[in-house]
Length: 527
Image 1 (cartoon, rainbow, N blue to C red):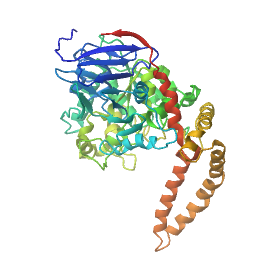
Image 2 (image 1 turned 180 degrees about the vertical axis):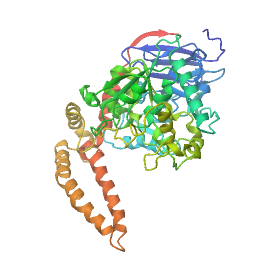
Image 3 (image 1 turned 135 degrees about the vertical axis):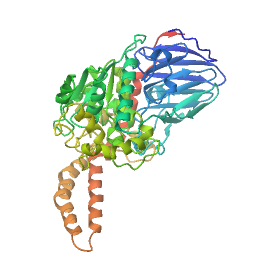
Image 4 (image 1 turned 30 degrees about the horizontal axis):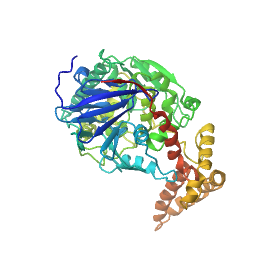
């Protein structure tokens, strides 16, 4: 379709050799109506818009700035400004920085840092907490990422407007939908799924994104898969186990829903070269590094996921305002992996998320009583979706599975080759700590501390100290011991799973390695 829109802006595209195929950086010069976009070779480029995105509208219109349902990112020129659009979830973000009179904006922190030659403090362990702050919600996250060029601004969910001189954050459209009861909500989810699938398969695309549904033995992804099946999605993918090694396969559920299911072995992520680097560089951790076990089957795909389902489908909510509140951060570490592998993550449970109050009302309504089973793992909406689709009660969502990998803790720290590479990096940069008057995080000493904790402190705490505290809490007048017990248990968990001692600096290590993917080599210029 010919783009007949009139705009004050012109876009020049520089396609970059060897860049991750879905990455882009926009270069905006103050006082100029010309925009330069450096990008990977799978980016959709048009006269007045570009994207690596799927949304609930007609692809040829390119109106992804007019909706609040977008998976991926891009930019749309209007008459007197350009709207940069972020994904409609808290799992990915846009980021920008102003250097002199030029503003740089990207869907990749690494691409942006490489473009402006921004360096970070190798001796700082604060970066994971900056990324992790988004788990507190859209209103309470830390937006500043410090670099040698100044703060890079992190923008989740909302959009950005460039008028030729300034870049301003604006709210995504807030579209009010009829979510008055279960049938209305399900109708909305199905119609949106149909629109998303149609958009992803549009023949005008350079690359179509064939939908594939993620599957597990829980609630969230199977419910999304059940909805996707009603609009013709046939391909599914599942990991065989959870992070604890327990069965988490969604193969049986998928086949009952009519899917051809690809089964992947979770631990196959360990076969990749330095597999944790992209996840850590994107989000400060690599909790969902297991996506690499599926990644070779996701190239050119739109993966329909259930991320955030555990939040939006809970019966009890701390926050029901039309914002995105506290969440667990699942899926955040996918972003760099998907840009490199060329797939789009579509967490469909976020759809309608600004009307979470309506969805909570549905979950607690009388009509949902039959599908409310009580307990801590009670999700009547996805249960009704699945049971109505023919999945027998008792065959799914019996227990909450452990899906995230704890690969930065004392017990399990990176793969062997990654740990060796990281330790070499620490030793190579030891003078950085010395020059700044900081304690050098010696890998040798750190390993001794970890070993002592795991072999002595942790077992004694679990078998002796915690049981004693529990007994004390039962004595009349000693109720405070229960509080001590909970605090001590949390401390042990933190020591076991959080990167402490010499393990605290994995982000600077991963950042430096991953940034190397964005060396500037132009294939050609497309105007």
